[in-house]
Length: 249
Image (tube, one colour):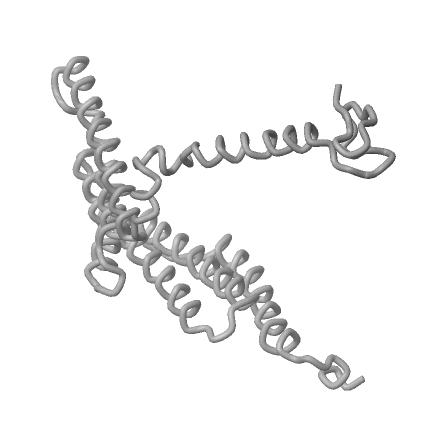
């Protein structure tokens, strides 16, 4: 049983003496112990990221470039193991490489994209050149594996190049925008409208050799007015600080 160190009154588990107000030394020792133990435990436990990479000091010393290289290495090793496994299964079941070429070609596509965006320098044009050439090469490889290069040359590759141009245009407009807001969504809607028109155009040319825009035209007519309204809100309404002066109220 605890007693007050000043007046000798029995105080039990009270934090202070009810007569003189002196603090209970046992209560203070319990509070200090409860506060210190979690702190020691928390300080002694490394974070999940640090435990994955090694020591905490090593994890903090990693630069963003080092982290990207680690991510690239993990992706590459995982894809390599999956590729070997698929080849072995295909050889054991069929005696030759057949269906495994399709997923492996997709693995190569992912590996090249990972190399372009995780390993190559941001400022060099080779990064974007590799990223742009990867989808057409992947589609040509699929055409080669299927034994029919017609759909790859006439439909898949042109559509992939067209899609890359649309994405590049939207990205360029976004990067050159001085003030970003609703205009970015408007650019994306315009890009989606152009992409729909291109898809139907290339599909019509591949199937019948004639262009007859139906669903893509309806989609474009629906998206473009919304994009125009968003641009109006961004450059006219959101920019103005006095709505009374804007609408002449």
